[in-house]
Amino acid sequence: MSFIQDTSIFELKSSLQLSSFVELLLEPINKTKHIYLIKLGLHEALVNAVKHGNNLDPSKIIKVKRIITTNWCVWQIQDQGKGMAHKKRVFKLPKNVDSTNGRGLFIIHECFDDVRWSPKGNRLQLALKR
View 1: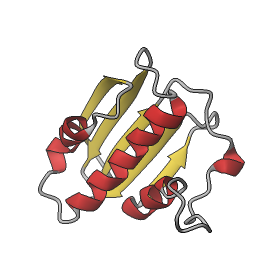
View 2: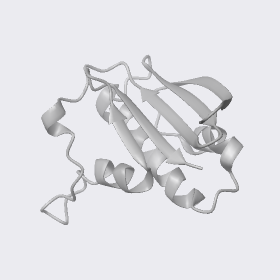
View 3: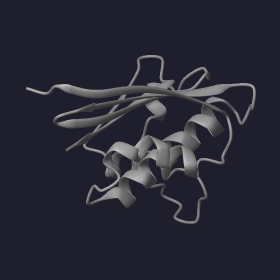
């Protein structure tokens, strides 16, 4: 059984200046063994939300709900975009290794124990076992 220890909601105007925001999201678990991978995965998810969801529009916001339980750390990242179609949610490396795009979803899936999408595709839930 898992008990909620903390729930926090954050909002960020669409910007690729994400380092301090990622640090804020990680405050309760900053001493975790694999913190670098978690930072990388969160950063990728936020970049995708800002870049692809909100189209870098600074008037749009990203909402993040962080839920810490005895067994899980969960981040729900939601943008104001139209959502990603189910068939585009591919988490394999691109065939063209020189491509500058296509690695984000693969990285996200490698960094977290559970990744889920909302039906619309504009909210991503990332979960990490504690």
